[in-house]
Image 1 (tube, rainbow, N blue to C red):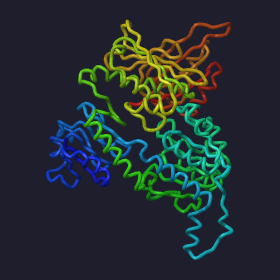
Image 2 (spheres, rainbow, N blue to C red; image 1 turned 90 degrees about the horizontal axis):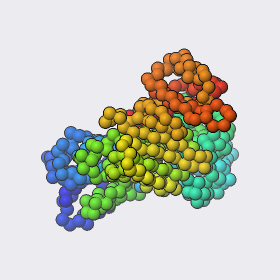
Image 3 (cartoon, helix red, strand yellow; image 1 turned 90 degrees about the vertical axis):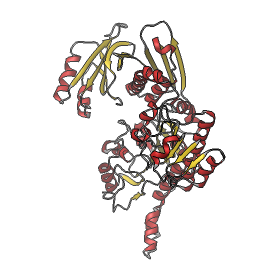
Length: 527
């Protein structure tokens, strides 16, 4: 085997590969003819974030079997190109979870005890003990937005400080939360009840700007906010205004919408702690990701064991071509169903029919789970089932043979009820929603959708169209369906409207003012 370590790694990382005495290991400074030339007969490639592994580079690697990313993000790797070439791409999610959790707690302590100000005044030769009275973490309510690996590590450490733990994450089961002494709440409760609020979710359309003028206004006066996740989760103007007014007592930010941070309204605010995206930057974490990826690459090349892969499992070219449209369809269906209800999920059921009932469906299954969990931490088509299991989500699959049409029916179940939708692929590559809430309806599964649930009475459709027109929202597709009448009241109806623009909050409020409209929800699907 030949392994290329294209970027500098720790001695411990190198030692993992050196245990294989017959393997050839080339480090980043041992590539006299360049990386492309050495890839000609390489079996494995290990990178961090600097080397760009694109399709052009992979053209020089006909024998490459695995790319290992020492870290989480794979933006520097063309995973689609790797998949087409049958190359497994692996990363190391969770290896730096403890480091991020520890910094989150350190920032909470620093906020509560005014440590930066205490340090600065002491270095200035001042002894301002009276003005530096702080508060304890003990007895305070810690709100955790996102209970992935990092969120759970934060919770475990916060318990030692005798904090009351509440969290919002619709994709974590009550059992997992209970085991960690965490009360699951709505986002509204999280914001209104927290003394400290720490963010640990990924960036999605739903989480972008989730801390804004409106949500901050609902929080306790003097709340302290910690963000070691993504800068885009916070509307900076709203947070700055709240810090100046005292609505937010303090904020500690390790991540920013634009990095590096060179000019910011946060500069000069003495109730803000700023750190340069160092949450995962510990000696232990950096070594951990290197050693972990080395172990994963070695085990894959020796034994075929796939761990933390971010692309497809092993499929023949013809199988991949045949399943690819259904993989995309499954992911979008998962996104649709999750966003159509946004209730807590404790179970995922998948029913395959037609050609899918006879196919290798692990990839289709994981794509559907990936779509469901897309609003949480980094989830891919290989680790999706594992993450669902870690979160206590039950998974049930059924293959119904005999149907001519290849389709997938996805049901999410939880304490608040269930949500179901069905999709298929038309014309070879067009994902289509064909049923929702048990109501037959056909609409492309792409772009931005507006889901409206309403009573089946006259005038609703016309008013929806009028309101969208008034708000300059162009309709690309308008699909309607209705259920059979139950009892003496009007039947229920459903509209799924594909729109060219994301409806504004004002447009949604106008829609929700329609008396017969029960719900209006925006659903944004991945490209």
